[in-house]
Amino acid sequence: MNRLLRGLGLGGITGSPQAFAVSLGIMALLLALPALHNGYLELTFRNILMFAAMSYGWNLLGGYTGYVSFGNVVFFGIGAYCSAVLSAHHVDSLLADVPVALVCAALFAIVVGVPILRLRGHYFGIATLGIALAAADLANNLDVLGGSGGLALKQVPQEQFSLYYYAMWAVALACMLGTFAIARSKLGYAFVAIRENEDAAQVLGVWPTRYKVTAYALGAMMTAAAGAVYAPANGFVDPSIAFAVDDNVFPIVMSILGGMGTAAGPFIGALLLAGLNEILQSQFVKIHSLFFGAIIVLVVLFLPRGIVYLIGLRGGMRRYLADRAAFRV
Amino acid sequence: MNLEATPTGSASLTVRDLRAGYGDVRVLWDVSLEIEPGEVVALVGSNGAGKSTLLGALSGIVSVESGSILFGDVELAGAATDRIVHAGVVQVPQGRRLFGGLSVRENLLMGAYLRTDREVHADLERCLALLPRLRERYEFPAGRLSGGEQQQVAIARALMARPKLLLIDEMSLGLAPVLVDQLLGILAQIHAQGVTILMVEQDVQTALEFAGRAYVLETGRIVKSGPAAELLDDPSIKRAYLGI
Image (cartoon, rainbow over all chains, first blue to last red; front, top):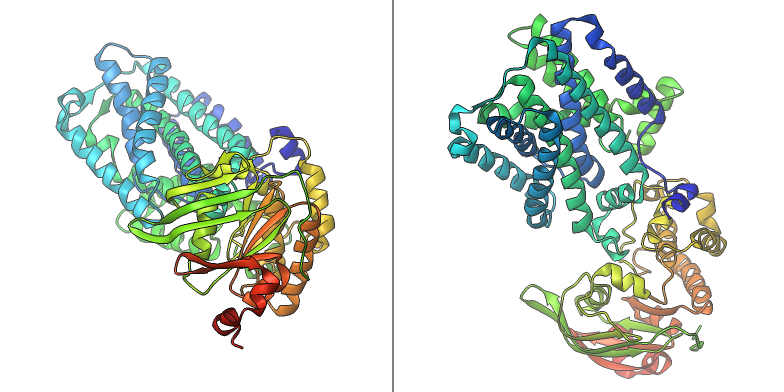
C-alpha cells in the first residue's frame, strides 16, 4: 500500500531534496571531525548535533502536524535523568541509556499527549509549557533524582571523549533519516493533513488524536535520545541543566529558521544558529543577543519557510519574488 | 432535474430518534430519517436548524447522545470516523476544508487514505475524467484554486474514499449560480454511477429541484418530509424558504 501511494506520488513532503542532500553531505564531513583532535571544535559540534536532534524532535509535531510545543525540553530532561539514574545504579553504557530513555520518553509523551493534544493551537502550547515547568520543579524536589543538587555521572575517561561525539552524531543522523522516512510515508501525510486542516482529516477517517500523539511520542524519543547522550558526556545533571530554557527555545527557533516541516530544516537551522551564536558571542560579548534577534526577525519576515527554501531555489531574485507573491515562501 | 432512485447494491441509511449536540447544548431532537440506496435526498432548513450537526453526527465528528444510525447493518452512532468512512459514508464538508498547502493530487490521494486496495490509481483517473478541470490544476496547491475549483476538489477527494453514501454540506455556499449548476451536473453523474446522495442546502429551491426526496429540519426537529417536487409546491415551504 505504501509503495502504491508512493508510486502515485503520495510520497512525501520532505522539503527540497537538494537541501537534504547537502545536509547528508555535511553529516558525512562531521563524521571525520574527531580526526582533527580539536577538543573545542568537537564540543561545539557535539552541541550542534544535540540541538539538531532536539530540533527534529520538535519539528515532527510542530512542523508536520502544526502543533507548537513550548515544552519539549521535558523529554531532554527525561533522557538526561534516565542516564543519570542508571549511572547511579552503576550502569554506565549508552547502549542501556538510550533505549531506556526512548521508552520512558515515549510512555510519558503518550500519557501526557492523549489529554493535552485534544487542545488546539495556543492552548496546547501553554499546556506543554506548564508541563515543562512542573517537570523542572518535580526534579528539584525528588530525592531519587538528586533534588536541586543534581546527580553526578561516572567521569568519562579522556580517551573516550570522542565516543560521545560519535553517539550524538548517530542520534542526529537517526533523527534526520527518521524524519525523512516518516515524511515520505503515509504517516507523514496524516501529520500534514492535520496541519493543513484537522477537521477535513477527521472527516476522511484520519483520527487526529492518534496521529498527533504518534508525532509527539516520536519527537519525544528524538529529544530524549539527545538528553541520554548529553548527560554522561557532561558528567553531571541537575534541573537547571536538564530543563534549561535555551534547550526549550533553541530547537523551535532552529526549526523555523531552517524550515519547519522539512527533513533538512532542523539540521540546517541548528548548524546556522548555533554557529552564528558562537561567532556573535565571541565578537560581541555584550550585545550578541541583539544581532541574534535581528537575524531571526529578518528570516521570519523574508523567508518564513526557512533557509531550506533558498537551497532549492533556481532562478535567483526574480524567482524568489515570484514565489513570494504566489506561495508566501 | 428530478433524479429517480437508481437501484444499486449499496446499503440504506436508517436514522432513529437521534439526539446529538455539543456538550450540554442539544441541537438535534429525536431526528428520524431514512434513505434508500440510490436516492438523492435533500435536507433543507434555515440557519441554525441543525443541518450540519446532523451531517456531523452521521460522520462521527459530532457526538451522539442517543438514538441509532444504521447504515446497512452497521451501527454508526458513536463510531469512530475511520469506521464510518470505511463503511462508505463520506462527507464533503462545508466550506470545502481542503488541505490548502497540498497539491490537488495530494488532496485527492488523502481521500483514499484508509483504502488498502489497488484500485486507487484507477479511481484517480475516474475522478479526473469526471472533473477534467482538476487535471489542469493537478500540481497546484489546492488553497490557490478558485472557489468552484476548490469545491470540485472537495467532491473528488470524497469520491476517492469510494463512498456508498455521499454527504454534501452546503455545496452552493459562496458560488455563482452558473458554477452551482455545473456542480449539480457533476453530482448527477456521480449519482448515475450508483452513489446515494444526501445534500444539505440553504438554497432550498436548488436543493428541491435537484433531489428526489427531502426532509425539512427546523430547530433540530424534522417537521416535514416527502417527494421534493411536492415540497416545492407546499405553501408553507414556499412562504418560509422561497419567499413566494
